[in-house]
Image (cartoon, rainbow, N blue to C red; front, side, top):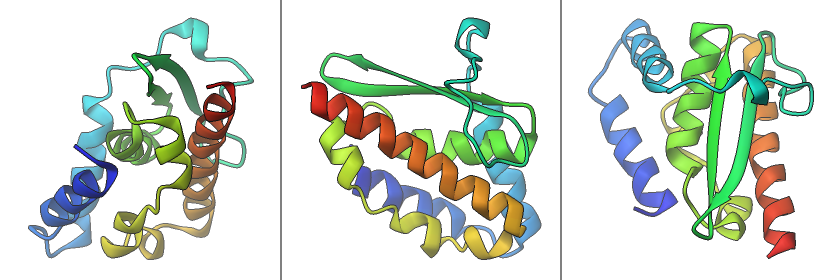
Length: 139
């Protein structure tokens, strides 16, 4: 699936919920589905700076696609990074770097996060795209 198709699917899934508490529960489910991250990748270099909680993000190329793995010590942050990974992982690095993450705005995520969490979300996106730019430059 393309990044756009995945985002449209996520928008449709979130539209099933009227209440933001239900949407938060759904976000937490994304985190529960993350397989976690090997301890060897929980390094300072893989830490997303500016997050209220600890979020680690690891990226590596697999069959010309950039694959992401992540973990967090907080349920909401783990869910948010899980959502972002669902959108961006296993895509071409150049496509990831240029991707418009319209689903974040359309589901209303930013305005329903505390300022610290919204800042963390922005920093997660920056780090994902930074990895993509770095891998695209190598290609």
